[in-house]
Amino acid sequence: MSFSKKLFLAYSLLIIFLAFIVGIAFYTYNLRVMEEDVVAKLNAVSDKVAQEVSSLLNQMDFIIDFLISNNDFVESTITLNALNRKNNSNLVYVNEAKKTIEGILYNYLIIRRFYRVSYFNKKGDFITSNFKSPFPQEDRVNQLINKTKWFTLSEKVQGNIIIPQYYDPWRDDKNVKVFSKVRFLGGYENGLGYIEVQMLYSNIENIFNDESLKNVKILMTADKNVFYARNISETEMKDYYKLLSKFTNVEIDFSSLDKNDNELIAIRYLPKQKIAIFLIFDRTLIERPLKISRNSVLLFGLLIIFISLFFIYFMTNQFTKPIRELKSKVDKININNLSQRIVLENTNDEIKALNKAFQNLLDRLNEAINKEMKYKLLQMKANLEALQAQVNPHFIYNILNIISHRGLLNKDKEICEICSSLASMLRYSTSASSRIATLKDEVEHVRNYLNLMKKRYEDKLEYFMEFQEEVLNQRVPKLILQPIVENSFAHGFENKTDKMKVWIKGYEKDNWWYVEVKDNGQGFDDEALINIKREIENIKRSFNYNEEIEGFEIGKIGLLNTYARMMIFYKNKFVFDIGNSNENGGAVVLLGGEIEVNREEGER
Picture 1 (cartoon, rainbow, N blue to C red):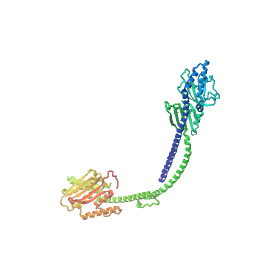
Picture 2: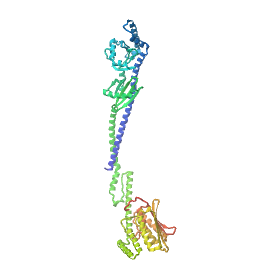
Picture 3: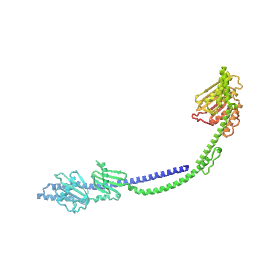
């Protein structure tokens, strides 16, 4: 896959991903905002409904409390239950008691606010505030008391009980739906009777017919009995009843909001009345208006994505055009046209920078190839010098073996040592297997050379070699030390009559290795130093400008050849210093390079 296609694909996936994330975030945010709004409204209407229901029931409790705290009412109920009605003289008191109770019940507030407030007992007495309704007969009153479970239940309960929706049993037509509170009056044998406060069931229905509850399912229970229900199945009721367990032993009004995957459930509990109100809102109703906006946003998002992808495709082609052009021209480059310049049109700064970096790479590669060729030439010259004018090394080794054998026959150990040192030197210098050696190898080669010089000059020559272990494993160009030491004998000791001394020291300092070669000869004269430094500058210029190195002839390997090979090997990160010693006037040559522990092996 091409770079432009990868770029287009990457940006396309990014745009689609961002659109997807923004869409999900937008939808989730709006859903959460709308749900919070529904929750707030649901809580508010739940509080309103609970307050209205509580107000109705508290009014009913107030009337009951009012009656049982009224002495006339209580005494009248006692009279009705205590007197023997078979005694005609007591009937006057019975009728008077009934009129007293009627007078109390025929109160304007009672008649205005309640459908019916009634007092009845097991004697068959029935007195009610609803004087428009006919009074039931005595036997019917007892019959209703015995067969209605609520009246029987009230005898077992201390206080008022709520009777949920039912049809008014005191009417013959039974077409008026009511709810009531009943209080059993105990304290006398079979009790003093019952107080029943009735309200029309339409009062409850009106509370829940609020416009804000149009899409809300409603359940109201009284002591876990259904009081009011709307749009709720029997199965759903069982699930909601399970939520009532959390209201056990609650002593103050309790509110809660439960959530599940499909519903928001606002719960209000009135512990005094044992009333639980559930307002259930279908969560899918929240999502319906969002689906329309979601679909609109989706279509708009797809349009934006399509336009974005088209724009990205166009721009990626434009941006990658210089890269394709650069690739085409790079493919045409080979070793024969490394110096050719690449010119790009209609490009941007980054591509120009890339082109410049590549051009610099080509220049460095071309320079490296030229330097490698020069280094091979220098190495070849070094090998030719070592071959001593193309003398066959095998012939020399054979001659040395013959001489060494004659030395053994004549019991002359020095001849053997000379032959061994010379053979080692020839073997090291003529070996073409590698152009790189370690300082340890170079030191051993110089030691063989100095041993030979010692045989020649005997006690007239002294040499001292001291190397730190840290520098012996450093890799260097082959044959860089022996030409420097040889220079002392060729020029430094030319007119020397007293003892000749050579010091060679290798050490490490500041993560660089150094080799110092010093003698007590006549040193460099000023003209020689000037000439050598001028030649060094010529070599630098030749390498920097890829010019042909002149002035090296086969058979004249020395300081300049060593400098040139050091320059190629270390790429200007080396030390090469020549001068005269302040102590004895002899020559001093200092070599050095940066220590590289992990220098790779191979051709340089």
